[in-house]
Image (cartoon, rainbow, N blue to C red; front, side, top):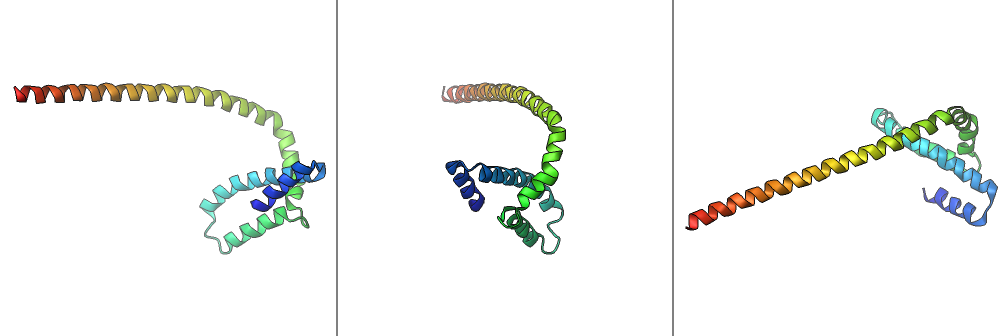
Length: 137
């Protein structure tokens, strides 16, 4: 991760558009790889040489000689994302709206829980103090 991160920094710093595009394609492919990896780690990690193949794949993705990320991006991801862009954008808008509503509901539930816990604690303390007071008299 350090190698592509550093060269992404260099591309941004030098304003080299060709390198900037190259590393943007890499990060897009790598993000998809990371999502896929999460699923495959759970299902096929038992496969012999699985981890070695993952390392080889990442090296192939970032190698300046193979430019694997550029190949995957141009042949597969760009056409797929272009054809599904409107649907993806609509889904993101819906997810943001639902996310906001969900956070408001969680916040409301959290406040209710905190208020209930505070009242319960206060009532218990009141009864405990009352019992102690009654025993001492």
